[in-house]
Amino acid sequence: MVEIKGLEKFASRDFPGHISSTVFLGGCNFRCPYCHNADLVLRPESLPTTLLDTFICYLDMRQGWLEGVCVSGGEPLLAPHLEELLLVIKERNLLVKLDTNGSLPGRLGEIIRAGLVDQVALDVKAPLERYREVTCSSVDPAAVSESLDLVRNSGLECTFRTTAVPDLVGPEDVRSIAQMIRGARLYQIQQFFPNNTLDSRYLEVRPFSRQELLDMADLARSYVQEVRVEGI
Image (cartoon, rainbow, N blue to C red; front, side):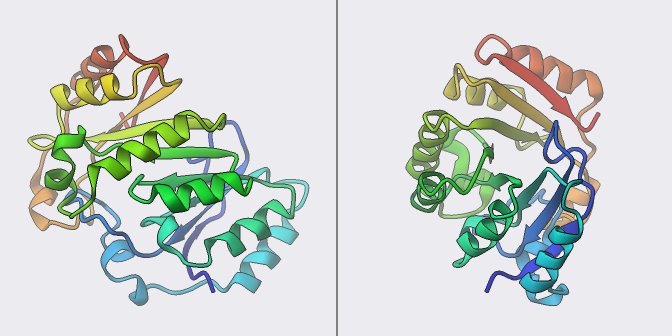
């Protein structure tokens, strides 16, 4: 059974262009020190669970109003019964957007081939050679590269996202990532917020300024079709 650890009933930013809700699934195989979902990543069992039956009732009560659901985490592809949740959403003629860190291309490919997702947001944490350093994990960078290619060739609407973090992920990293996803339709650079971070030291980190983020966006525009800056 999929355990939903959070439900945002109206999520205007998570599924752009659609009236949507977001569900959050617990657990993640990354330990990005700046992550602001520490409880969801490290202690999902400490969070209340929304049962699938309750979520189904929620969806049925919003028929004719809700257009889509964003499934986020944590890393939702870790959930062994994720397909059950996605089927529940799709059976109600709702769109599905999946947020993923790209570390599980096998699972991602299964979900896409099954027609259970309409849009993907893939978080590109760093240039491939810095992935283990930035995510504090043993992730195989080749798996991330495979996911990038899979999403780009899927025909689905996709967004690649990077969180800019002072002294960890900066302008040259953004440039390298933009080169790596060259030709992508949309690249989103996100502001880091020092709130409930996995590593408490990041609570003291001062985020990049608005202008610094805009300058990073300019670096990326030579390589991708559209660049957005979120959180400024």
